Image 1: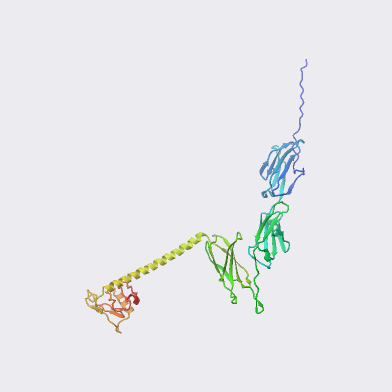
Image 2: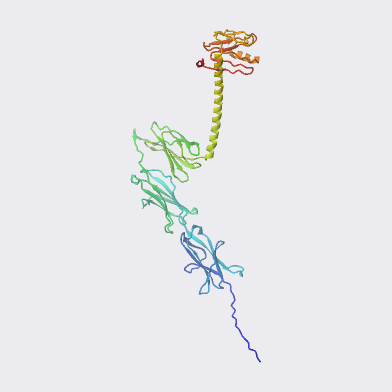
Amino acid sequence: MLEKTDISYLHLCPNNPPREVIIMNENGENLQGIIGPYNEGSSLTLFCEADQGLPALRWWRDDVVLDDFYIVTEQNFSRNKLYLEILKRTDFMVNLTCSVIDNNITDPIASSVIIDMNLKPTEVLITSLYHPLTEGYPHELICLARGARPPAQVTWFLDGKKLKSQITESIVKEENLTQSCLTFQPSDSDSYRNLSCVGENPDIPFSKLEDTWMLEIQPPPEVTTQVSVLEDPPEEPKNCEVTNSSSKCILVECMKDQDEGLEQLFQLDVFDTSSKELLVNITDFNPEFHVCSLPAESSFLLLLYAINTYGESKRIEIHANTTSFDEDSDDDDDNGSEIILITLGASFLLLVLGAAISLYKIRASAGGEDGNIITSEDGCINNQQKAYILGNLESGVANEKDVIQSNLNTGTSTSLPMLPISDPIVDVRIQSCPNDPTLTMSHGEFPLLSSNLILQVKFSSFFI
C-alpha cells in the first residue's frame, strides 16, 4: 500500500547587492562631484536610488546623518528623498553623501556631491571719511562690497539716478571683495541730495545692499588778487602731535605757521576709527586743541588743517587713543601723594614760624623797663651783672656769625631776656659775664640759644 506524498515547491531568489547608488535632481539628471551653483536662500531637492536589492539608504552631511527614511518605488528601486528648504552661506561647498545601510557589505556603496553656491553681499560701505564737499572741485569716493560670490557689482546713484562717468573698479576674488572709486565733482544744486553706493549679486534676486551719504556742499574758497598775484591757501600746521591723553580727553598741539600776516583759523575733526563717525569738530585761532568727553580705551583719527580767506591747507592725519580709567586712577594717586607732601611741609614751616613769633612776643613783653639796660636775676646771666644795650657797635666787636659760632662752641645753655620793642633796634650787643661769649643782634633778629641748637628767625620791620 502506497502512502500519500505531499510535494511543495520553493522559489529561491538570490539577494544580490546593489551595483551602485545614484544621486539625481528633480529632473532625473544624474549628479556627481560639484553641483550647482545654487542661490543662497533657495531650496534644494535631491534623490538617492539603489538599482537592485532594495537596500536601506541614508543621507549624510559630512559625518552627520540628515535623513534615513527611504521607500520602495513601483519600479522596485529603493529611494531616499533629501529636501533642504533654505540654502545658507554655511551650506557653501558642503559634502552630501548617500550610502547603503547593509552590515553584510564589506565596502559600503555610496555616492557624494558638493554644493556650489551664489552668495549675496554681506556688507556695502562708503569707506571715505564723511566731510563737506567743495563745489566745483573733484572728489574721490571709495565704496567696498564684501561677501558676494561671484564678487558683487557696484553701482553709484544720485537721488536714484545712475552715475556712469569717471568710475573705476577693482576686484579681489580671494576675499569676495569689490572696490569701486567714483570721481565726483559736485555743484551747488547737489546739496542735501542722496549719493548711494549699491552692491548686489545679479544672479540672486533681492540681494542689494547700499550705503548712502546726504551731500553737504560748501562754496569754493574766494579767490582774490593782490598786486596781480593770486594768493595761495595757508600752509598746513607743523609738528602736530598728541602731547597728553587720558580716559576722556586728548591734547593736540601744533606749531603755528607764519602766514604773512593773513588771519587764519585752525580746524580739528575727530573721527571714531571703528564707526567712521565724526565725533568732534573744533575751530580755533591757535593750533592747540583740548578735546574731552571721548569714550575711554578708543582709537581716533584726527584731521588738522589751516583755513584762511584763500582756502584750506593740506590735511594732517594723526592717530590717537584714550586710556583706561585705571591709568587715570594711578596718575591721581601720584598727584595726591605729591600734594600731601607739599601740604605737610608747608604746615610744618608755618608751625615753626608761628612758634617763633609767639616766643618773640612773650619775651618782648617780659623785657625790662629800662630801654638801655637788661637785668638778669642770675646776674650777668650767671653773676647778677647787667647787660648794656649800645647804640653803636664798637669796631672791635666780632661779627654776628663769629659770635654765634663762639656761643655754640661753649656748649652752654643760656636763656636771654628779650629787649623791649618800644624803641627801634638798630644794632644791639648783649654783654654777659666776663668768661661767657658775647652775642650781637641786628635789627629785626632775635636769638634762641641752647647747647646744641641756634634757631634764628628774621622779621621785617613790620613786626617791630
